Every structure is written in structure tokens, then in C-alpha cells.
Image (cartoon, rainbow, N blue to C red):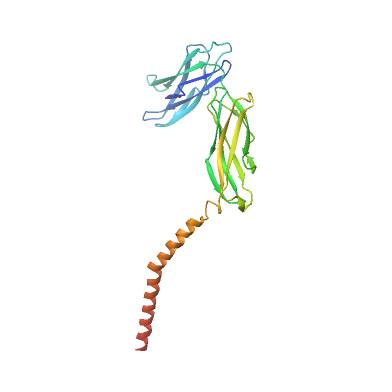
Amino acid sequence: MSVSPSEDNAPPGHELDYEVTVTNTGSSTDNYDLAVTDNAGWSPTLDESLFENVESGESRKTTLRVTIPEGTEIGTQDNITVTTTSQESTQVSDNESCIAISAPLLRSVETSASPGSKEGSPGSNLKYSITVTNTGNVTDNYDLTANNDENWNLSLGKNSVKNVSSGGENTTTLTVEIPDNADLIGLTNTIIVTAVSQENSSINDSGTSTAKVVEEPVGGIFHPADRERLEEQGEKALTAFVIPLVILFGIITFSVWWRKRE
């Protein structure tokens, strides 16, 4: 069995969640009782305390939850142990431990845009994936805004992401509209998406990407340089294969016609 993460922290009054995985490493189906204990008296709980009919090689998961009591001194640790025992034989048992730590409240966020750059022709739309990751130790909500150097139209699939847990992430889509103007070809526009904590506006982070205007769309239609290269290759193929075949076909046709005359 396993418990993940092995260690986590949160301010007093907040809950920590751990993933518990139980795997039947025996050769036959079994049932397992799950129990949890700790040394600080924080009363951890399991969403499920019994796994029934777990087949050989199968894994089951549940969540371990513990709330750090209000008023707990910062730095206090609770050592938590989860034990799994077979109902068929109490000698078949395993346990894993994790640690919960009382820590100061920390709000932090990271924002990223993917891909980091894209190309498109005038009048086309480009799409990017925006990921907001809560790098703090409490659940948070974030407002999202998008800006760019050239004042093109930008739209986000979500203007905010809610209830992002500590270590968790939420994604949305950014659409960039390239104006239908051939004079923009060769221009690179920088786009910035910013996530701001609704609880504390000083907690924010931005992800950056670029959009370059090219003569033709990327994805399915070739650039001029690509077309010239392929045309050159086509001419070589025509010279090397097609023309000799035409000549051979002409010789065969002439031979058949000549034989018919005889």
C-alpha cells in the first residue's frame, strides 16, 4: 500500500488530503479492512474503511483527510499511519505513514501558457492552453485577465477558476484573433495571461506566449519555401521516373502497331 504525499502542511483550521492506494499482491481475491491512527489526536478519517472483492493485482484508492485544529502551534506535526488488513488472514497486513504539519498560511500561484509560440495567417484564430497552479498551502480562487502588445482581440474560456486546492491546477483556453491585414505578416505579438488571487490581489503570476503572423496558415498549407522545395523534388521525380515510362509506353505501342501491319 502507499500514501501520497508523504508529507504536507496547512494553516490551523484547514484540511489536508492524502491518497491511499491498496494493492492485492496475493494470488486470490481478498477483502481488506482499513484503519487510521495518529499521535497528535487530530482525528484523521478515511473515506472508505473496507475494500471488498479486490482481485489479485488490483488496486483500490481512497482519501485520507485530516483537519489541523484551530490554535495549533505552527510547526506541530501529526504522524499518521494507515493500516490495511486482510479479512481472510489477519497476518496479512501492511501499513504506511504520512505527516501533517501546522504551517503559516501561504498563498502562491503559477500561470503558464502552452505552446509558448504559435503562427497564423491574417484573419485566423490561434488557441493556447492556460494552466493555473495553486502553489500555496490553502485552497484559493483566481481571476484571469489577458493582454497583448498589439491590442488584438483575446478571449478566455474562463475569466476565473474556483476552489483550486493546494498543489492543484485548473486549465482554460485562450483564443487569439489575428486581424485580417496582410501588412501584419512578419509581426510577432506578445500575449500575457495573469492569474490574481481573489483573497489577496498581491498574489499573482503571469504566463507569456507569442503569436507570429505568417503568409499562410501553419497546419495543412505549405509556406512558400516548402512549396518551392516540393516543386523542385517533383520536377526531379518527373525527370527520373515519369518521362522514361512515357517513352517506354510509346515504344511498346509502336511495336504492337508495327506487328499488326505485318
